[in-house]
Length: 143
Length: 72
Image 1 (spheres, rainbow over the protein chains, first blue to last red):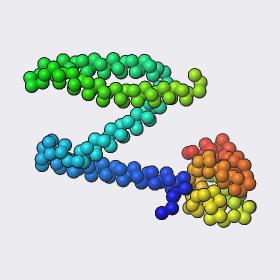
Image 2: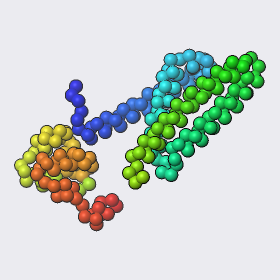
Image 3: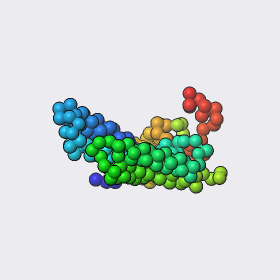
């Protein structure tokens, strides 16, 4: 097969891929929905499609950050945003740690490990947004 | 968008296929550009201009009134 060089066809090809992606996602949601109804939530999450669905959702969310950062108003300072986000994240993690260690069946260790996971999972997108905002600020010629 | 591509192409004695081969697109794309049904990128516009020995404004320029009418 020849490589497509025509810009119009490249664009159309991307639109076709988008349609295929939408159909595929609807299919996955339908299968997972069926599993949820017939086997319950455990049966649904055991399906390998669940992993595929979660990974694609995360990738899609990260990629859409790229667009939402460029869409937001120019005034917000990246460092200020990073500080606020990290503060909120740390507060959430501390609150989660206290609540988890108070619940029966969880010990102090869980109270440290789970908020630690929350922090790592939250820190990555926050830092990515900071990186995107900083990059946008550098590309902004007027400053 | 309306343009002068068809006249320019005929004036240099090129067929749609020959022009398409020169600029590296398909004949359908050239046809759609001529009909004003596809807006090419600036890069493709320039390639077309070089192929038919015209400037950008000679091929793809619309007066403000024409532009306003084309939008409505």
